Length: 145
Figure (cartoon, rainbow, N blue to C red):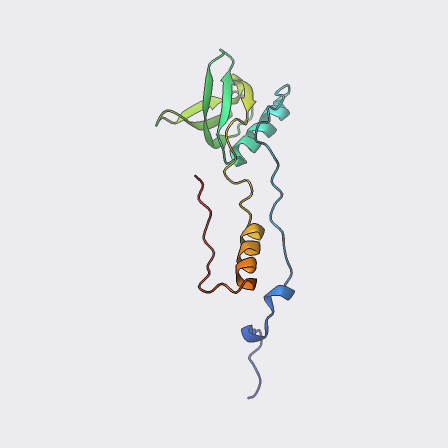
């Protein structure tokens, strides 16, 4: 039998630059945003964005107390009273669970640690170093601070 087995890919002949490129999801610029929480749908959408955000948020409860921290989980229920945001407060090791119905305001107050850390930016730096003739180069993540 001659030739290659069905489904075999000759990796030496594959040109990675010619492969289809699927860009990552566009990130919204949320840092500093204070959404309007007028309707149930606006509250749910804002808290979904807060969950995806990679920085601290500030939640203001209906009683006026504020909690700044990282929103690490959310549980969506049938009603706002049955839905909960889970947050690590900035200056505490506690995990708090706050009902959506208890949230009067939300602000994206912390720096978005994922901003500008795209794969494309990483590859661009690598290509620039390679084109400059650098040897022993490798991709290393940028420090978060």
